[in-house]
Length: 173
Length: 234
Image (tube, rainbow over all chains, first blue to last red; front, side, top):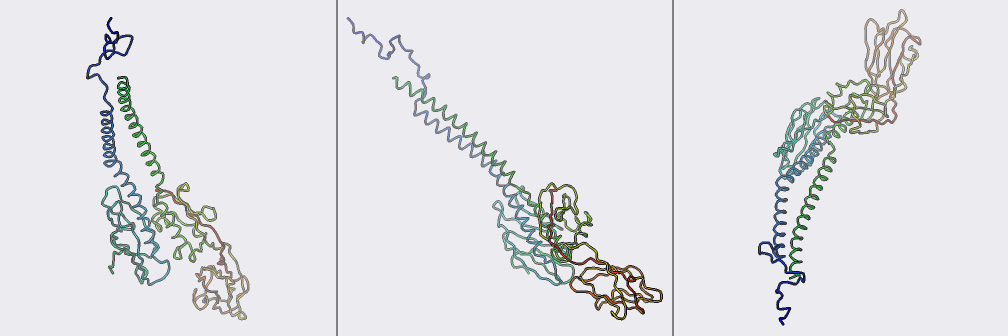
């Protein structure tokens, strides 16, 4: 009598019948390949997200934050200029040093007088601003320019009714 | 073999799990960016409007302001009569913005509706606004002079001399403030200093009984008041 075990095909563990033998290309991937694929996909994803963020989103946010900082620095500069002019007196000489942030968004900038306003001049196109000054009526001329990279001061001079307010850099007279 | 089949299924399942995880990660990233954007937009506060409000308050209460008699001493009448375009010219940051100036809550002058965009409050002294009328007698006994009991910035003098009497000159302390060789008749406004007590003296050739000369002035007394400057965005 033949051995019933021997007549069974070595692959079949199913008592109901023989299993279909799968061809090579119908097999699922093995775990090692799966893990490698996952690592590759995740790396690609991270690279893609980093490229999108650093290329588009982050510079925009830096510019927006730089704009807000610039506006506040401009307002602080305007306050300094307005506070430096005394309300009473005839002959006056005031020299007040002003603290400006050295860079905005990593680049130095300038604050310039344009008629009655202070204007922020920054190399980046999205950062800038303009603020109108409120100075006493006896201030006759307003001029000068501040570079953020050098120490800045306001100089108010005059000995008649028309005073002169200047934005001065460093050790200029 | 059975074990192989099970781990083969699991391998594909972990790929799906990775995909789901990446989708969730992307969704979280997008949500965080949206939240940060909204927070950033809400945080910016228009520092230029705040500067306009503070600068206006500073200019209004300064010693050289046309609406004060001294630093922080406000004349509410002159401020209430202020012209909006005058204010906008004198204080350039107000140009193109709605604003309102209130004293103790009462609106004195304003343009547009600032909707409480940015309000600055200052504690000021407010000059009293009641007039005092005096009708003193000017004769030789009083040396044709009278002293004002309170200091004031200006006094209104009405002179109606009796027939035969001519008032030639009026002195305030040692300053001639009115002079007319043919006689002063009528109402005159004299500017005075709030820093000194004033004695008015008339150069007349006859006595002036009570009622012939009337003085009206606003005494320079002060009370505390709250000045509110509200400036809106342009």
